[in-house]
Image (cartoon, rainbow, N blue to C red; front, side):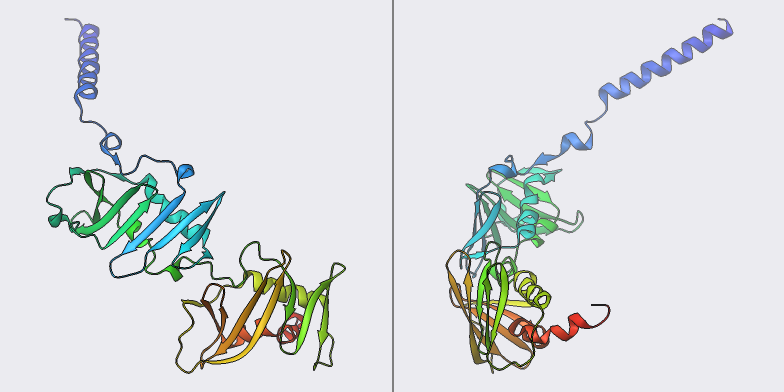
Length: 291
């Protein structure tokens, strides 16, 4: 056999061996992954989260926005809901029959997530894999534990922490010492006890805080704080004709704005709470260089 013929034979054997390997090799890791759900996010309209010994949390989608309907009616943090829905894209290397659920910690799941008419139960953990057992329909899967960690421990963990919710655009504030109302496209102040004027820019930024400043903590069903006392009331008239009446309470560490219409208490540090209650409290900050 000539030298060139020998090289050609070696090349042929190498290519043939490679083709045989590619044909008989095990399926790729991607092909071994099983989808936990087979539903696109755009078709989901209802979510429910049930933890043992806790109130059910129920959400409903209207258009592009989610809203809580149980245990209270309230706007929710849209990003947190989108994070929960990431489980629709979860994949697992293992798909097991839903039998002998006790060994997976799924006989009585500590958490159940309902996505429309489908449910998924969260069970125990596989230490070696650092993954969590979940059950949906007739199968058990192992998935990343982060999906379970994204589920809130209480309804307060999902509620939008801003006092005025999206779409609640104010037209008038009625506070103990003064009123601020929109007149002819400008905010006007009717003050009872303040001698100094307040800049229009300050009023605008003060109102923006009501629409954007998140509370440090939320409570549902009233603040129920030891030592809290009611200080005053605030009325906010909205452009759609509704009025929201807030009760203002204070304890040693926070000022609490309680919305009686949904029973949610918005807790702010003392200084921040004072700035919400009085635009004069933020005017010196806004006039300081660098602010």
